[in-house]
Amino acid sequence: MFQRHRRLRSSAAMRNMIRENQLRVEDFIYPLFVVEGEGVKEEISSMPGVYHYSLDLLREEIEEVVSLGIQSVMMFGVPEHKDEVGSEAYNDNGIVQQAIRKVKEWAPQLVVIADTCLCQYTDHGHCGVICDGEVDNDPSLELLVKTAVSQAKAGADVIAPSNMMDGFVAAIRQGLDEAGFSQIPVMSYAVKYASAFYGPFREAAHSTPQFGDRKTYQMDPANKREALREAASDVEEGADFLMVKPAMAYMDIISLVRDNFNLPVVAYNVSGEYAMIKAAALNGWIDERAVTLEMLTGFKRAGADLILTYFSKDAARWLKEQ
Image (cartoon, rainbow, N blue to C red; front, side, top):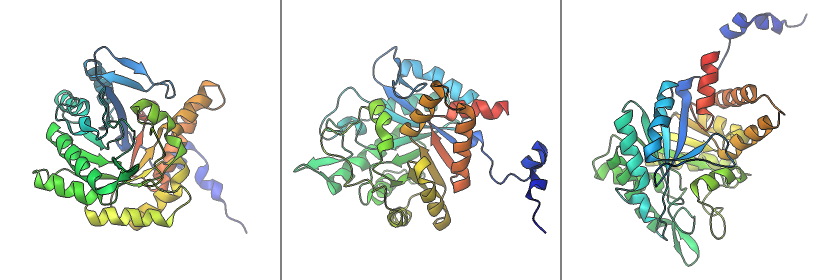
């Protein structure tokens, strides 16, 4: 006697009935890169289909996002002026603050998430203040709190700190509360690895470190148990979401975080993962639609509640076609 597992795979309807994980357009968060100037819609060379937008051309993109049923965007600002302390990050009239206000005006129903970091804004490309050649943790927290409060004032619905400084969730949570923004949730980049998959993003955000690397504050890709310590700290400090970044090579970490914490889990399908699939598809080596939907479903199977992905618009169209 042997098991007849194929009985439950006999037709499309049967397979649909017993499908364990469903991919929905509501699961997607779409990243956007906003730059200063006018008339800018410039494709990022290593990320086909992803663009830098100036504010005057951003509205059309937001209208398309809404029409596809995507309910959330992540805002990244790329300023013209950079300095050693990333002052444009917490400028109330900075590019990302302007963009947040505009998006909330055009599409108030969208959940607008603000990436909260300094790397796009510093002239050295690191995520904090430099002291004696090293990233100094505690002074960096002060500037990150100022950035989070400025973004909340602009109308951000969620603050998403990505800097990986020790204590960043506690500092930002306290800062938001004291500024009257206790209702704003924190989507922590809780488990963020020092990954080689970030290359195209650094081109997009103009945030490549000008010296050294980020290994003293981002996690070693070889470590798994450390992910639990990082996530547990953020839960204790008041995080409302836990993000794992990257996603594709870290599905075991997504699953680990899901199994150990009850907060919503976010998988960041990062730029290098996007670029690899796009490149292979452009060469005719893979079926882009099939591979992408399989990968995104894999994130859901691993335990992700939400997926931050540059494929959001493509995937939304494909799901509608299905």
